[in-house]
Length: 188
Image (cartoon, rainbow, N blue to C red; front, side, top):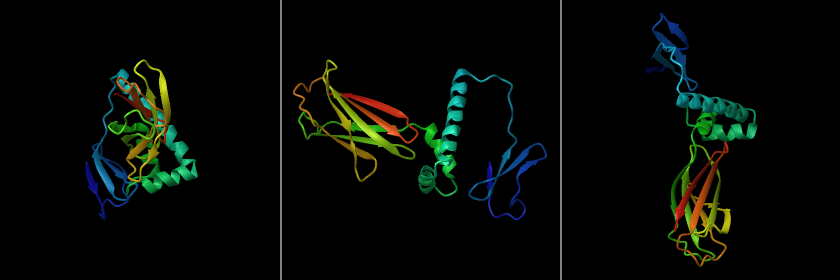
Protein backbone atom coordinates (compact mmCIF):
# COMPACT_ATOMS: atom_id res chain seq x y z
CA UNK A 1 0.00 0.00 0.00
CA UNK A 2 1.43 3.38 -0.96
CA UNK A 3 0.75 6.73 0.72
CA UNK A 4 0.76 9.76 -1.55
CA UNK A 5 0.88 13.31 -0.23
CA UNK A 6 0.89 16.64 -2.06
CA UNK A 7 0.85 15.11 -5.53
CA UNK A 8 -0.87 17.21 -8.19
CA UNK A 9 -2.01 14.13 -10.12
CA UNK A 10 -3.60 12.22 -7.21
CA UNK A 11 -4.72 15.11 -4.96
CA UNK A 12 -8.42 14.68 -4.20
CA UNK A 13 -8.70 11.46 -6.21
CA UNK A 14 -10.78 8.60 -4.82
CA UNK A 15 -12.27 5.49 -6.33
CA UNK A 16 -11.07 2.64 -8.51
CA UNK A 17 -8.74 2.94 -11.46
CA UNK A 18 -9.28 0.09 -13.90
CA UNK A 19 -10.02 -3.01 -11.89
CA UNK A 20 -6.71 -3.20 -10.04
CA UNK A 21 -5.97 0.05 -8.12
CA UNK A 22 -8.06 1.81 -5.48
CA UNK A 23 -7.50 5.44 -4.40
CA UNK A 24 -8.73 6.48 -0.93
CA UNK A 25 -8.50 9.87 0.77
CA UNK A 26 -7.13 9.94 4.34
CA UNK A 27 -9.00 11.99 6.96
CA UNK A 28 -5.77 13.83 7.87
CA UNK A 29 -4.90 14.53 4.24
CA UNK A 30 -3.12 12.58 1.55
CA UNK A 31 -4.20 9.68 -0.62
CA UNK A 32 -3.74 5.94 -0.14
CA UNK A 33 -3.24 3.64 -3.13
CA UNK A 34 -3.98 -0.04 -2.66
CA UNK A 35 -4.90 -3.08 -4.67
CA UNK A 36 -8.54 -3.92 -5.23
CA UNK A 37 -9.98 -5.91 -2.32
CA UNK A 38 -10.86 -9.49 -3.09
CA UNK A 39 -14.15 -11.01 -2.01
CA UNK A 40 -14.22 -14.61 -0.91
CA UNK A 41 -17.29 -16.80 -0.91
CA UNK A 42 -15.97 -18.93 1.97
CA UNK A 43 -18.26 -18.63 5.01
CA UNK A 44 -16.62 -17.05 8.08
CA UNK A 45 -15.34 -19.25 10.89
CA UNK A 46 -16.80 -19.01 14.40
CA UNK A 47 -13.80 -16.91 15.49
CA UNK A 48 -14.29 -14.55 12.51
CA UNK A 49 -17.98 -14.21 13.33
CA UNK A 50 -17.02 -13.25 16.90
CA UNK A 51 -14.68 -10.56 15.62
CA UNK A 52 -17.34 -9.27 13.20
CA UNK A 53 -19.85 -9.11 16.07
CA UNK A 54 -17.40 -7.17 18.26
CA UNK A 55 -16.67 -4.81 15.37
CA UNK A 56 -20.39 -4.11 14.92
CA UNK A 57 -20.63 -3.37 18.66
CA UNK A 58 -17.60 -1.06 18.30
CA UNK A 59 -19.36 0.85 15.52
CA UNK A 60 -22.41 1.36 17.74
CA UNK A 61 -20.15 2.52 20.58
CA UNK A 62 -18.19 4.94 18.34
CA UNK A 63 -21.46 6.42 17.02
CA UNK A 64 -22.67 6.94 20.59
CA UNK A 65 -19.39 8.72 21.38
CA UNK A 66 -19.93 11.04 18.39
CA UNK A 67 -23.43 11.85 19.73
CA UNK A 68 -22.01 12.83 23.15
CA UNK A 69 -20.24 16.22 22.81
CA UNK A 70 -18.12 15.84 25.98
CA UNK A 71 -16.96 12.31 25.19
CA UNK A 72 -16.34 13.22 21.55
CA UNK A 73 -14.16 16.16 22.64
CA UNK A 74 -12.18 13.91 25.02
CA UNK A 75 -11.50 11.35 22.28
CA UNK A 76 -10.62 14.11 19.80
CA UNK A 77 -8.14 15.64 22.26
CA UNK A 78 -6.46 12.25 22.79
CA UNK A 79 -6.27 11.31 19.10
CA UNK A 80 -2.95 11.45 17.25
CA UNK A 81 -2.74 13.69 14.18
CA UNK A 82 -4.58 12.09 11.28
CA UNK A 83 -6.73 9.91 13.58
CA UNK A 84 -10.33 10.94 14.10
CA UNK A 85 -12.19 10.78 17.42
CA UNK A 86 -14.46 8.17 15.78
CA UNK A 87 -11.49 5.95 14.84
CA UNK A 88 -9.99 6.23 18.35
CA UNK A 89 -13.36 5.35 19.94
CA UNK A 90 -13.69 2.38 17.59
CA UNK A 91 -10.21 1.17 18.51
CA UNK A 92 -10.87 1.75 22.20
CA UNK A 93 -13.88 -0.54 22.07
CA UNK A 94 -11.95 -3.22 20.20
CA UNK A 95 -9.06 -3.27 22.69
CA UNK A 96 -9.51 -4.14 26.36
CA UNK A 97 -7.39 -2.51 29.06
CA UNK A 98 -4.31 -4.45 30.19
CA UNK A 99 -3.16 -5.07 33.76
CA UNK A 100 0.62 -5.03 33.45
CA UNK A 101 1.52 -5.64 37.08
CA UNK A 102 0.06 -5.96 40.59
CA UNK A 103 2.73 -5.15 43.18
CA UNK A 104 1.85 -6.60 46.60
CA UNK A 105 5.26 -6.34 48.30
CA UNK A 106 4.03 -3.26 50.21
CA UNK A 107 1.05 -5.19 51.61
CA UNK A 108 1.63 -7.07 54.88
CA UNK A 109 -2.02 -7.29 55.98
CA UNK A 110 -2.06 -4.02 57.93
CA UNK A 111 -4.30 -0.96 57.54
CA UNK A 112 -2.38 1.65 55.54
CA UNK A 113 -0.39 -0.92 53.53
CA UNK A 114 -0.33 -0.25 49.80
CA UNK A 115 -0.88 -2.29 46.67
CA UNK A 116 0.33 -0.77 43.39
CA UNK A 117 -1.41 -1.59 40.12
CA UNK A 118 0.12 -0.80 36.72
CA UNK A 119 -2.49 -0.80 33.98
CA UNK A 120 -2.81 0.70 30.49
CA UNK A 121 -5.50 1.37 27.93
CA UNK A 122 -5.37 2.96 24.49
CA UNK A 123 -7.67 5.76 25.71
CA UNK A 124 -8.57 5.92 29.39
CA UNK A 125 -9.02 3.73 32.44
CA UNK A 126 -12.03 4.88 34.42
CA UNK A 127 -11.73 2.72 37.53
CA UNK A 128 -9.40 0.31 39.30
CA UNK A 129 -10.95 -1.69 42.13
CA UNK A 130 -9.32 -4.09 44.57
CA UNK A 131 -10.83 -6.95 46.55
CA UNK A 132 -8.91 -8.87 49.22
CA UNK A 133 -10.12 -12.26 50.49
CA UNK A 134 -8.75 -14.85 52.92
CA UNK A 135 -7.48 -18.18 51.59
CA UNK A 136 -10.91 -19.74 52.24
CA UNK A 137 -12.66 -17.01 50.21
CA UNK A 138 -13.93 -14.96 53.17
CA UNK A 139 -13.97 -11.26 52.18
CA UNK A 140 -11.59 -8.97 54.06
CA UNK A 141 -12.10 -5.69 52.20
CA UNK A 142 -12.70 -4.06 48.86
CA UNK A 143 -12.40 -0.57 47.49
CA UNK A 144 -11.24 1.75 44.74
CA UNK A 145 -7.57 2.43 43.97
CA UNK A 146 -6.47 6.02 43.48
CA UNK A 147 -4.78 7.14 40.26
CA UNK A 148 -1.18 8.27 40.63
CA UNK A 149 0.10 11.35 38.76
CA UNK A 150 1.96 9.15 36.24
CA UNK A 151 -1.38 7.98 34.85
CA UNK A 152 -0.35 4.33 34.50
CA UNK A 153 -0.12 3.36 38.15
CA UNK A 154 -2.85 3.22 40.74
CA UNK A 155 -2.51 2.80 44.52
CA UNK A 156 -4.87 0.91 46.78
CA UNK A 157 -4.46 1.62 50.51
CA UNK A 158 -5.64 -1.21 52.77
CA UNK A 159 -8.24 -0.35 55.40
CA UNK A 160 -8.69 -3.64 57.26
CA UNK A 161 -6.37 -5.94 59.16
CA UNK A 162 -5.54 -9.30 57.58
CA UNK A 163 -3.64 -11.43 60.12
CA UNK A 164 -3.95 -14.58 57.93
CA UNK A 165 -1.89 -13.23 55.04
CA UNK A 166 -0.66 -16.62 53.73
CA UNK A 167 -2.93 -17.77 50.87
CA UNK A 168 -4.96 -14.55 50.77
CA UNK A 169 -6.00 -13.36 47.34
CA UNK A 170 -5.83 -9.85 45.91
CA UNK A 171 -8.17 -9.41 42.93
CA UNK A 172 -7.77 -6.30 40.80
CA UNK A 173 -10.43 -5.18 38.31
CA UNK A 174 -9.71 -2.50 35.70
CA UNK A 175 -12.51 -0.77 33.76
CA UNK A 176 -12.07 1.38 30.64
CA UNK A 177 -14.34 4.01 29.04
CA UNK A 178 -16.41 1.57 26.93
CA UNK A 179 -17.01 -0.47 30.11
CA UNK A 180 -14.70 -3.43 29.49
CA UNK A 181 -13.53 -5.03 32.73
CA UNK A 182 -10.39 -7.14 33.04
CA UNK A 183 -9.29 -8.84 36.25
CA UNK A 184 -6.10 -10.24 37.70
CA UNK A 185 -5.71 -12.27 40.89
CA UNK A 186 -2.55 -12.54 42.97
CA UNK A 187 -2.23 -15.16 45.71
CA UNK A 188 -0.10 -14.05 48.65
